[in-house]
Amino acid sequence: MFFKKLFQRQGKTESEALPMKLVVGLGNPGSKYDGTRHNVGFEVIDRCQQLFQLDLDQSKFKGIYGYKVIEGEKIFLLKPLTFMNLSGESVIPLMKYFKIPTEDLLVIYDDLDLAPGKIRLRQKGGAGGHNGMKSIISHLGTEEFNRIRIGIGRPPKGYAVPDYVLGSFSNEERNAVDESIETAAKAVDAWTKDSFINVMNTFN
Picture 1 (cartoon, rainbow, N blue to C red):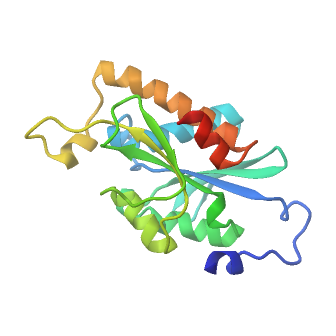
Picture 2: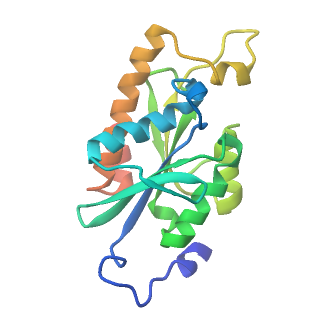
């Protein structure tokens, strides 16, 4: 209710009055994190960037973002550059500035509880131990927003979770994860044309 009141649009130009959706991929900035398990959210954004033919050419709100009008809506793609634990410091300021309500937010992130190659779409839920999600939930003040979880699997016995999520995929895992990234990007594309609940029913 707070965000609905906050985001009431008044006196906007025709372009600004377009409905908007924000797609956020979580990860850590810097080349040393490229291809790691914790950065699959970034990889989905990269694929969406190709799919939508747009550039992440805006640097603001502690992140990089871009947008394109698709099916009469402004679709924003965002990569927070805050490092994972502070993701909310990028997401929420952008939402407030562009007046994007929580029901039009979609967050994409890695999930230990799903096997590599699996994805799950949900409209609400806890952080599940994911620090990026903890940050967003804390700053947003609600757990009720759309998300796509990308499976990365559990670490082997005796393998510390921080080391595991910051490690690279095996060749077999990489092939499975590439497929899930492609599927997630198609789900994002479907969301530009349909309700999230219908997209969930299709892609789950």
